[in-house]
Length: 419
Image (tube, rainbow, N blue to C red; front, side):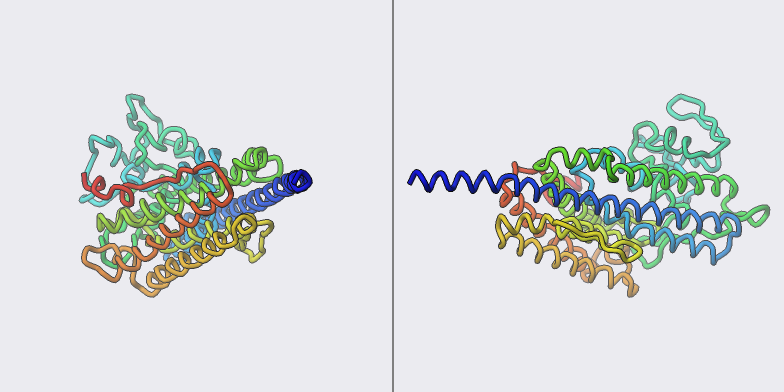
């Protein structure tokens, strides 16, 4: 009996460094995928800038369409990085600058008369910075004669500490390219005319030069923000170093991001809430009607980090030791169940994406009484919720401390949504 105990102890001692090494390898893959995803997001944003510059230099239907296509392409890699939120403080502290939504677009530019005016919640809901080179903000006189990245990020973004005052990031650019979507739950996206960037008498919407300056500043700021984040995940970067410093906390961070994005953020706030309210304003990409793609690539991002593989925009594959292999070593059944759940979710999101691309837009799916649309969205919601339960089982299999995932009233307390 004594010898058996000794042998067991020796095996345990031998296994401990190997397990630590496995965790370090998994975390390195995770960081490599993050770096690749943010680098691809940067590259795509640079392509967006080229298209925006072409639109401003020569406004036309063709250059407007090309700028919109570049924006949609830029969303593909970025949405796959959202899984790095929730578990990495450096990402959470930064993310609001690049992907905050929904926004009170009247802060930025002209809006339809039915949009309304200032509210108790937001005094600057129709500030229209593009039309006003000077204004008062929180009691301070602001000189906005030059629209710069600094004006957007340091003065306007979340002005007066109101989260809806989104002045920067993908969705500010989206609004400036598409304009408001005034179709309600009917088919159709925003339809800003290219002449909103024209010169002289051809200018529509007024202040075309300032609108061009705002769009340029917003894209330049997006590029600098993405460049900074890509560096944080490179060798010696703060995000990578923090992750690798504590392997157990690092593994927990991966699972926290997976579970929180799957459950509270995507299944709840981005999907079920819109169904409950039948409100197209709850669409993530509401101006462009690109929401189906945002949902799909969010789901793909979760699967990427679990399987330890990311396919870049140029077709290159970044892969390595995976969290899946770590879970499989602890409990093969849990790993198999989670892989199946991830595949099922991608199947449901794929059906939603295919339907939208065939002409059944996400706006229409949200319409009250549209049973087919609700079924498409809720099937994906149910898959995401089930996926989260599988992620919770992976946490248990790895003997990690209990992890708290982001919640949503739409899932946890539906009656509160209508209070």
